[in-house]
Length: 506
Image (cartoon, rainbow, N blue to C red; front, top):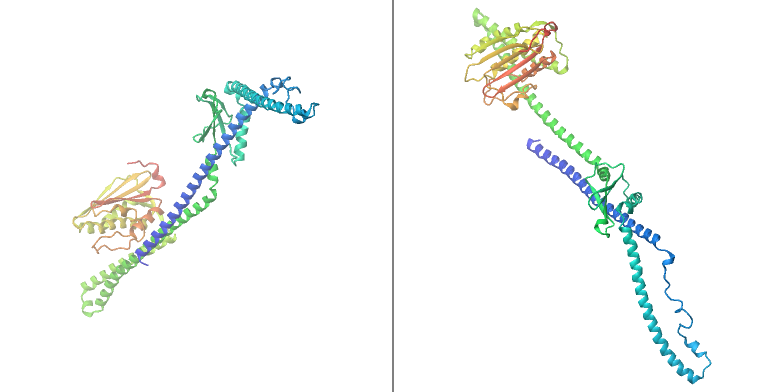
C-alpha cells in the first residue's frame, strides 16, 4: 500500500475518532445544561410555594388570634326582625275578616306599600352590607398590619420554613443537601444553618419573603446546594463509560499507527542494513578472490614481493571480514541478552592511548592530528577490555568517517574523573549532526543521510553497540553537536571501588 493511501486512511480514521469524541462531550454538556435549567426552575418554584405558604400561615394565625365571637355583629336588629316589621304576604291579607271590596282595595294599597317598603329595606340591607364589609376589611387589614409590623425575626418560624422548603424540593424530585441563610432587605443576616458551607455557594437561589409587605419589613431566603455539580453530572453518568472507551480507542489507534510507522521505519533500516552488509561483504570477498586467482598464476607466484603483497591483502581483507561478522554477531547477542562480559581490572587510559595510536595514520592522512588531554588521576575500571576497546574504536572511526572533506580533521581526546567515574570525551571538527538526528543516532540500523556522498560505509550498528557496552558496564554515552562545526561524544564509566572514594569532581 502506498504511503499516501496509508496517510489518507489514518487521517480519516483519526478525524472520525476525534469527531465522535467531541460529539459525545458536546452531548454531555448540553444534557448537563438542560438539567441545570430544569433544576433552577424547580428550586425557584419550591421557594415560591414555601414562601407563599409562610404568608398564608401567618395570615391564618393572625385571624385565629384576633377574631373572637364577641366581635360578631348581627345583620338584623331586634326591632327589625319582629313579626310586625315584616311585610304581609298575599295569603295573610286575604285571610283577614274584611269585606271583599274593602279587602281588594286594601290589598292593592297594601301591595304598593309593601313593594316600596321592600325596595327601601333592600337598599338599607345593601348599604349595611357594604358598610359592614368595609368595616370587616378594615379590621382584617389592621390585624394583618399589626402582624406585619413586628420584627422579621419574630414573624419567621425558621424550622417550619426550612421544613416547607425541604418538602417542596422533595415534591419536585430534589433530594440533595442544601444550606439556607435568611437576610433582611439591607443584607443583614439573621439566620444561617448550622452545617453551612461556603463551598458551592457560587450558585445561590434567592426569594423575597413577605414580598407584598413594605420593603422595610421584607426579607430574603438564600439557598445553595454543595453537591449541585455531582447531582447534575449524575444524570449523564451513563455517558461517561462511552467517552472513556472512545478515548481509549483513540489512544489505541494512535499507538497502533505509531507502532506501524515505527515497524515500517525499522523494516526500511533493516533493508538498508542488508544492502550495506551485502556491499561491505562483497568488497573483501572480491579482494580475497582476486588475490587467490593471482596467486594461482605461475608468473605471479614466482615474484616473491608480489606473493607477499597478495598474502597481506588476503590477511587484511580476512581481518576486515571477520570484524564485520563479529559486529553483527555481537549486536545479535546484545539483542538476545546473551552477551557475556569478561570483566577485570583494566587501565582504561592505556586503552585510550592504544586507540589513538591505531588511528594516528588515518587522521594524519587528512592533514590533521589527534591531541590527548589526560586529566584523569584514577584510571582503573572493572570492564571487558575487548568491548571497551571496540566502543572507543567505533566513536573515533565515526568521527573519521563523518569528517568534513574540505578541511583537515582534528581530534581531541580528553579524560578526567567525575562523580566516581572515568570520563572520556572525543571531539572533532567534522560535519556535525543536526538536532533532529541527535536522539536517533544510538538506534540500531540508523544512519544519517549524507547527500550525494557514497564513500561512508557501515551498518548503522556502531553507536548502538557503544550504547549497549556503556549500559552493560553501568555507564552512559551522550553527544553534543553543532551542525557544520563538529561533534563531541562523552563516555562515562564507573571506577573501581578502591578508587571511587578518592576521586574529585573536576
